[in-house]
Image (tube, rainbow, N blue to C red; front, side, top):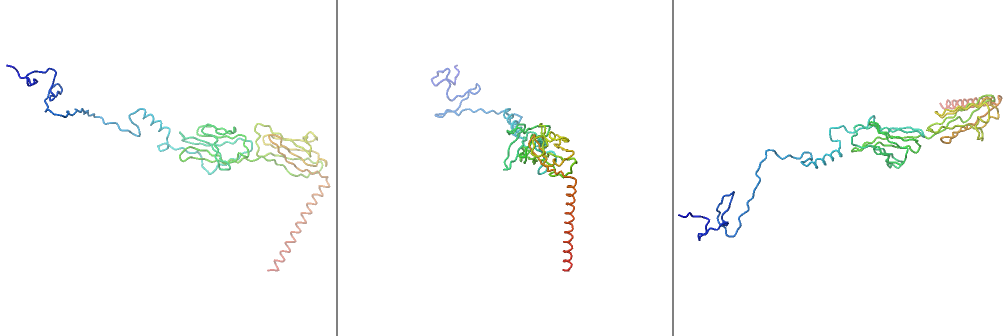
Length: 331
């Protein structure tokens, strides 16, 4: 007998390599499907149905699975720290006041101390407030931002020290230590640079044969590295007094800037103007008028002073008596 082959056509011929359209092969098995006239069979869609036991890691605080993103995030967070964490914020050391007043002499070096604790990534700068309330940037961190060579910045521990050498009167004003917090921290210093002055007695009365003693002092001046020069002159002479006359002693202290003049055995011709002159580091002078009197002239002068004083006292007593009498009549 002959076995029936379902793959043969109606005329009994078998077509090798040809499969009817209504036959589908799945995993090596041929399945017959109902024939369709015009439509194509829908495509087979394969889905990944694997289920993992580990859940997907969530992003935490802006971080993800990307190493590059994590690096960017860490860099940004480090460079943009604001003090919203557990660390102590910056603060000034010492007592706070409205203005710290600093007095300085002309030519001296002024020191501004600004101690900041817990500074971390914040910046310290020094500013000066001008008379027009304009701000001048002096330093930023360790860099100097002014053309004035007299300013210098030093840091020792928590102390940000600004120094100003060869101080002048026009340097007086407000100086600020500024810390770049939000809001900014500011500590103010009020600098007063005193102008130099020279002091000496204006007038002296002596008797002939006595010793003249005059003291001249320079105040609010720091000579710096320059050796001070102080000289004494009499009248309009430009020659130092100790070179003109004997019996003259001049003692000068360069540290305190004081000079002491002594002229022994005074004569009448020694009367006149005596000048104390500072020649360096700057020029200043003071003049004293010296009167040299004979013994009788000095006695008459003193007697005249006493007579005038007695007359004034007597006049005041008379006025009081008259006033008291009138006041008694009114009562």
